[in-house]
Structure formats: C-alpha cells, structure tokens
Image 1: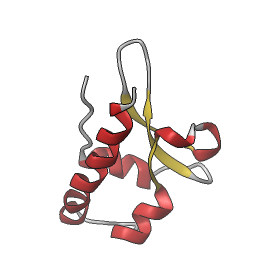
Image 2: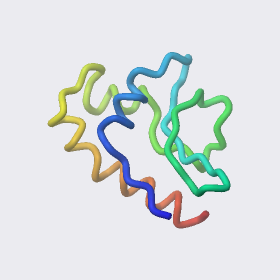
Image 3: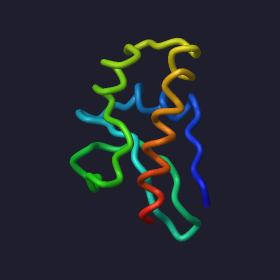
Length: 85
C-alpha cells in the first residue's frame, strides 16, 4: 500500500507539541501510514522529516505554495522508507 504525503501531514508536523516532533512512517496491520510523534520514540529509519528541518526549509508558518513545493522531496523520502517494508 502506497503512502502519499499531503499538505495536512506537514501542517500536523508543524503543529507538533512535543519537544522534537517528527513525521514518520508508522506500520500497522492495515498497512503503513504517516503519523507525528516525538523523535525519542521513533525508530530512526522510519523518520521522514523533523519539525526543525521543515521550519528551516519552508518556515514555521508556511503558506500552501511553500508546503506544496516541498511535497515532492518529502514523498521521495517516504517512497525510500516504504520500499524497505
């Protein structure tokens, strides 16, 4: 099952309230999906992006155009991670 990143996934990451939120590939019996959690609890090989990386890249309050522009590169990372599942 393929995972497709969408702008709301990035907004969810930017709104993360933990100390070090990350967007990561979570596995479940239904298949892989994207989720946001604290980096301390996520296996490094499943991390798609860290909040501070996205903030450095597109800013903390990025508009839709900036987020949409980042999606292809983030999708590539997801595809690489899920290829190994």
